[in-house]
Length: 76
Image 1 (cartoon, one colour):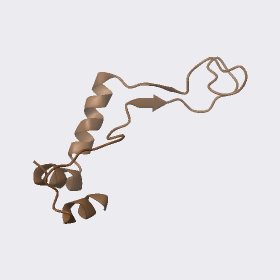
Image 2 (image 1 turned 60 degrees about the vertical axis):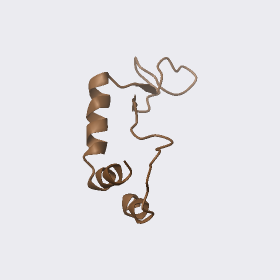
Image 3 (image 1 turned 180 degrees about the horizontal axis):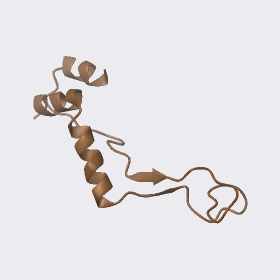
Image 4 (image 1 turned 30 degrees about the vertical axis):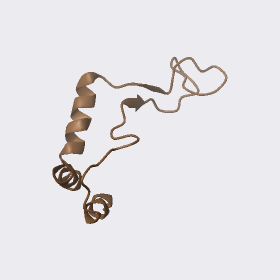
């Protein structure tokens, strides 16, 4: 739906400020066990970087969105 609103503005250029894909992964909340992501005994970060392959896949998913593809064609 947001892409339709952007197209209505007849954009000549589109600069995407902010997250276009999420380049990290999230571990589930875990207080107990070997990997703890929250609490006073936290020993692992909750977020960790995506691999290059994961990021390429996410960019491809974004580019295949029909609305986003229309904005990319329009704002060249």
